Length: 65
Image 1 (spheres, helix red, strand yellow):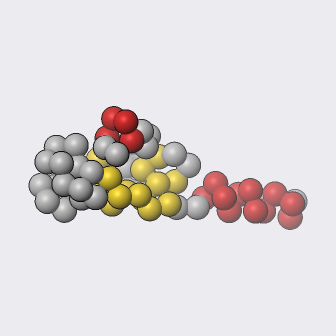
Image 2: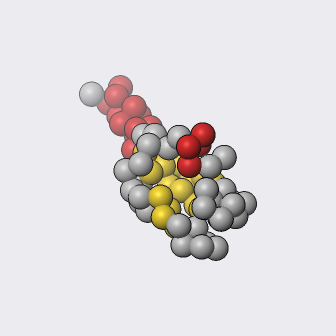
């Protein structure tokens, strides 16, 4: 069982990504916490308040680069 302990830790890791806002274009305006390819909590633009909801698949082509 201990052989797979590291695998579970990797799945539960949270990464931080800064995205440009698709609404107002603010560079790095939305800080996204991602886990397992999904957004772990709502991402809110610092400039205009645009929200990318929790649970959204992280697809940079659709929600910013």
